[in-house]
Amino acid sequence: MVMFYQNILDEIVDKSKMIFKGNLTEYCRNFLYPTPFELHFSNAHLQWFIDDPAAYIHKMNGTDKDLAAHFTIIKKYGVVLYGEEINDVFADVPEKDYVDSIWHDVEGAGEDILEEPVYVILNLCRVAAFLKNGLILSKKQGGEWALQNLSAQYHALISKALQSYRMGTEMDLDHMEAQEFADSMLQRIRDMLK
Image (cartoon, rainbow, N blue to C red):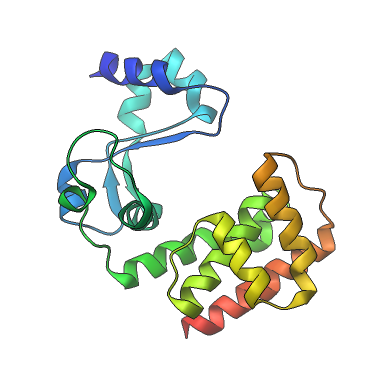
């Protein structure tokens, strides 16, 4: 089993921010929340994996609330590269689980926005889009939705996040403005969750 995972990871690991989760088909077809996973891998753990792959594989499994959102995105936008059709592998995720998953992902935005501003800004936008209009959007689409639907007060910030996302560059960030945006969006999202 260790060699199997090591061979897969050798093929797909590069300097990107790639994250890999291995799930059993059983939990894709019979959705369970939080969702069990067999293996989690990201480049942040590469050295640990190289040093002791057996220990890594033994430890890096469990459950993950984020998988409800990932499965929902797969159902909406996924493309089969090989194998069965998406609808034959993934069950629908109940809306309450999807909402809990996306809330779980943004609830720490007040602290996270200074570390990962592009991700947090665009993610807050797409969560608001779902809660307001029932739209399941990518980060880019969430930012574009926000420019049409949120206060002009934050359009410059959202536009900068979109530009950084498209270009793959660091975002020039006004910390106070970013913090105000996160606080404002979190309050808006909490109000929509009531």
